[in-house]
Image 1 (cartoon, one colour):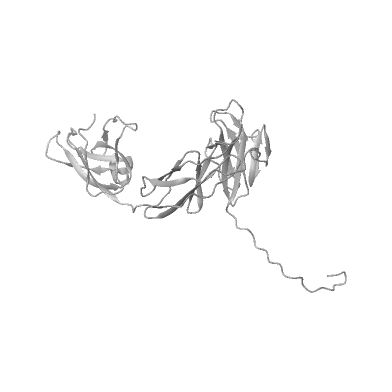
Image 2 (image 1 turned 180 degrees about the vertical axis):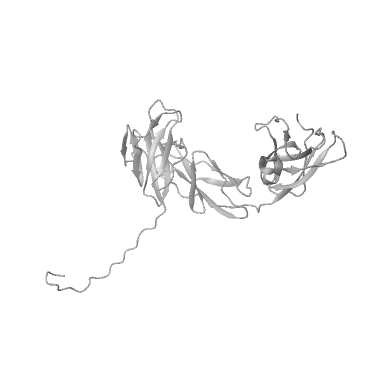
Amino acid sequence: QDAVGNTSAASNVLNVTTSAVGGNKLTVYYQAPNTWTNVNLHYGINGGSWTAVPGVPMNAACAGWKMEVINLGAATGAQLAFNNGAGQWDSKNGANYQAGIGVAAVQNGTLSSSNPCTSADTTAPTIPSALQATNVTATSASLSWTASTDASGSVGYQIWRNGVLIGTTAAVNFVDTALVAGNTYRYSVRAYDGASNISADSTILTVNTPTASNCAVTFTISNANTTVGQNLYVVGNQTALGNWTPASSFALSIQGSGANVPWTGTINLPSASTISYKFVKWNGTSAVWESNQATASGNRELTTPATCATAIIRNDGSFKF
């Protein structure tokens, strides 16, 4: 349009398609003080929450440098701070290092976007092989694979589930504990080195979690030395066992009469679960707990299998005074 209002015809139409979001990544490099034995990266993705202190351990990159890959999703950056896990921090005097998509390298308090390791390595590690799953339960699976090799000698791994990055590790194994019973999952693993070279996906591994079920467990105790008005209960870390609340726990039945006779009862408990429990004498108002066992937790312990064809029998001896 000119100064007197004359307007031309429209130009040719230009179509623009915006890029998909959700796959942004940030590779962080850090040159730690020589006195630091361990290096952790504590970060907060823009618009999201921070990692729990002290953060995530950083992996060795090239000489003198540590690195970690952050999956930003749709975010465009993150705030970074570093520590040795023993109270020493580099957080840019509390201001944190502000990094965007791509590469962030921190050295002597200065942030740059240049990869300090590229001059030494431009070749991706070999593809991880022999990906397999063991100990598959209704809610978890243990993954392992054969190590990749790289010219730098430093390799980390990205674990992908159904096309989504769910974790990184420097080991050749990973436990996924965020599964749902009766579902199918597809896993792959990629290897990366300190120069941000990333291998192709491993062969896809399909994992099917079993349908959640219950196991019948029969608890028997031979002698509880109860008094008049007391009954014997099993209390533990499951809803059916009262979640450690005697008033809501599972009542056993006395087998005979008198103080020194067996008590028994059968209850359904979740399969593929770790059960911690104790016996407690309860009269409706006050509880007498048995003393600690010779276990790390001090409780009696039971791990139920993924499936149970018959009842699990627990003959637990006498009430421990």
